[in-house]
Image 1 (cartoon, rainbow, N blue to C red):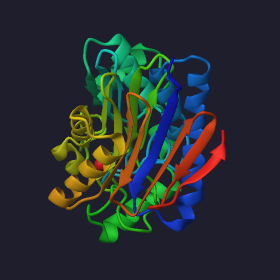
Image 2 (spheres, helix red, strand yellow):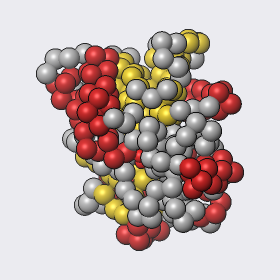
Image 3 (tube, helix red, strand yellow):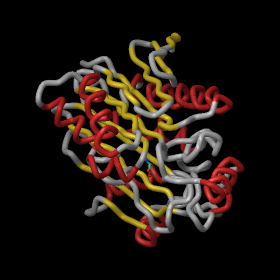
Image 4 (tube, protein in one colour):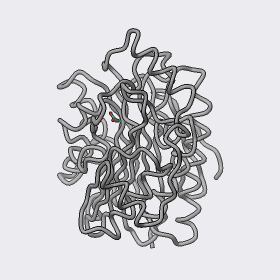
Length: 311
Ligand code: GLY
């Protein structure tokens, strides 16, 4: 049996100092929510869903409640989840009336002949499966409104999914786990980027860009500038490097820096090898992350700074 491990990220970007504590606390809580499931012998798939659900509820993150807004001031969310044992995937995009897009994506994986459902189709599927709706306005936080207003005044889609330094400091969320049976799973969820066009789809629901899991190699979840991540197929680029024998940390560094140098935008990624080795790297100013293994929580948000606590 493997020692189970779960790692989460809470988004890459120019996160203002005022948002650091909320991001770190939320990331640790999410990793622990997933680890509890792994400790009880639960699957990696259920653990990554639980970790992401925890961050979708938390306004410190750009996913579920707290998602950033499109140009019309609406939330349009996206999520994907992948199971490494059979490469099965589930993803949703342009979701507006549900708090937990990741749970709908999980249902797509288990219950749909398709892999990615969007807009009206995702809504019909979710209703058919009994997911409760919420009022779209109830997903909008004050920070998200502020971020859109700032974007409308002077924003551009440069270095981060969240815009300029003081625009709210939130980010995409993701989780990667290896369970006691050695199975890998990955989940990623986002509101996208402030001021995005209505109907814009980013990297998060696109398998190979935002999410990838393969029991034979490992798993990756990414965050950052969506258009760059999807052009570079960032998650799968890291998997490919690992497949060729590169370790998880080196593969994560190389691919994130490769994307940034080629496309001039920033990103971050969290990686686990199939044996539970960790890779964390970001080319943005900050990215919150946390992992739990061996009853120990390890976490950070700044470059070259790592903290440890007992679980
Ligand atoms: N990485 C999130 C987005 O750009 O949509």
